[in-house]
Length: 330
Image (cartoon, rainbow, N blue to C red; front, side, top):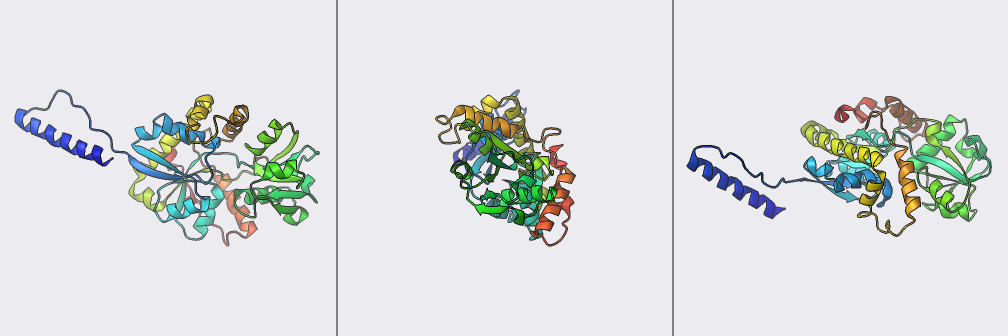
């Protein structure tokens, strides 16, 4: 990168010398190599085919065309939120509840683009006639832990159905939902609807699936920045959002190509069960915000604020208009 910058400076000086000698501008010129702005982007999860829109945006040059160079960071979601809030990083991929939890602590993060319209959490069980959250009463329900999108989504769905958390038996099982279900350690498990149900079906199981999005609309996954970046460098935000939305649109229209683009980032994807991984991607695409792309639904944010308040995770009603914006998707 340093070499490219030095070469660009030398070229500009040489061009100025020629102009001063000739007294006229040249008929044509060769542009110097574009210097890209480096963006480290926390993804909040391990490399996965579900991140295909971002991989496709890199592979197809969408970020580069906006002058951006992306480095994916697979650290914890809360780490990404903290780094963006401190303006040590400018962007992160997070779930909507993390934005409100952060702002309740005074952290100036702002949600600038919706990726998922539907909250991707649900409850799955091997087929046993579970048709509504009320059918979970008295059952052992596995959950990664009492935190994050899984817990928020479960609580929102139970509340919308008049079911109390105490009506079910919650078992912390980490991210081993498929193993816990197939070993009959739990009756049902809180999962991502585009992932574990697909795996279970591929293993030959019929499943019952409850989707949080069928009971309540919540602010879901998307892109955050901070108030400083919005104020001082709105063009950077606009370019980041524009390139990411192009990646989402590309993935919708060219899922096989986006899947292939993911192979450079997801270890073992080429040797995994391709049909299962492609179905996971297809199920993920079904959750995307498409009309219009990137749009944040005010009702989804109102619902999320109410859920977090009822859970006691925030102490007071927040200024939601400061938590998200649709200004950068236009």
